[in-house]
Length: 91
Figure 1 (cartoon, helix red, strand yellow):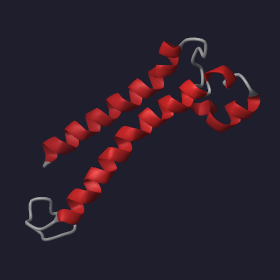
Figure 2 (cartoon, rainbow, N blue to C red; figure 1 turned 120 degrees about the horizontal axis):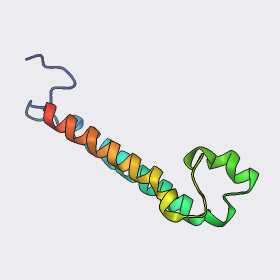
Figure 3 (cartoon, rainbow, N blue to C red; figure 1 turned 90 degrees about the horizontal axis):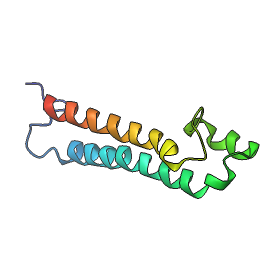
């Protein structure tokens, strides 16, 4: 086995594990952060200035329903979970 930077099984490779943990925390917290933004700005989502800033988060989604707005967050969390599971099964 090569002793490269991505050698996860080698002893003393705390840097790689720390990078993976930070990445997992970032990927998990990003959808939650987007959900908080959408909830706080729900009343202003119709404004052109808000659409210009964060319109891609709710493009084509009914902005009157919080359940419809949560679709993006649920989709991102589900995809993050899938990646984490697949990545975990590889090692």
